[in-house]
Image (tube, rainbow, N blue to C red; front, side, top):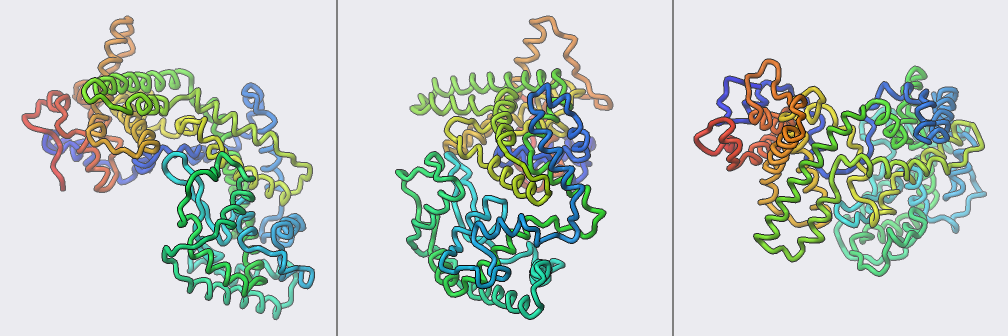
Length: 540
């Protein structure tokens, strides 16, 4: 805080003036409620959770945790540096989806090769071939395909670079140096010609490509791919039609390139053997994120915190319901019933929905059959499992709310929440955050931007806070009302607005403007700080 600033003049500077530039959660909060069950905050806890078999048994996920333990132990025991590219399990997989002509020689049949199909198979193992998939940000969140980046390394100046990486993989198969040079030259020639294709949005008919994509990647799932719904030509545009012609002129080079792209995805990419333990820890965490999130939630988030957070969410939800009822009476929304029901249903921090969704995805882990204990075999299976699990929500779009997929516990930390904060500060920070996310969820379904409702988000949280205080007093729970914060001589209502603005501290211009916009013409703020005019709306 910068207490030398008049809060009525610039409340953002007053709240955040001396805050370090380190608000890592901000852009997650401003973006869509993605719910990717990110386990970024589980670092340094994975080994601890791997040993929590008693907890796993109590949660009925012991089978899944045993699989995670097997994967982690196999990873630790394997020789991952240098990467064993020639492992028979990897070569068998490559041959099953398109082949590796550099290794197979005359046994590779070009007439049976499809660059598109092999690229689609790579997606199933978390690798990027010549096509990339993404999901629409709005309901029904359909998958789409687009051109992928053509290269082996992510950055042009990476070391080892593309040619060095390909040389390493090919040497693992003990190919002669002249053969290695020939293979790499063929791949580079293909890259050059493919890179000259016009990326313009010209019309192109490649319905067969799209059909193959859904058949290979989604098992022909009719829920994900509704053939009765019109689809834009841009889903499979002119670029793919032209790329098909280029690939027909370089079939061996394309197959070699895609084979090495898969190896690149399977590669631990270690600089030395000393990095292996950390890699294995991150790998198992990444492979079964829902399992570790469930274990973490049960092991580290006490029931009293879940109860308090649920109470705050419920108060904001009730405040929103009252606001929607008023707007219905005032404007007579034709679409009120369906729209308001979606807003209220898609409410963040519903721990019941979160656990229900997690259990459904975790069940996919238990269905995995792993007979071979070699790391390469388990690595392949775990990559396939991760991709399959990550697609679960898309397969069940129609029956799963967005909020059920969200890893709510990752936000239960400053600047959004801390159990020792005063009630007013909690409602300002967490309450306003919940209200904002509820509207974001709704916009992902409706695509209707209502600026008047957006400005009301902070008022909803303030109304929820006041309602909560009344409930505590009515139920004789005054002992739960802790309305002071050490070192600050601020009243409860002032602490509310401080909490609401503090979640934006450390952000750039957009965060500042959003924080100030939420205070625009806010009479509750004016009264709390005894301002004579509209507070905190100066744009810099």
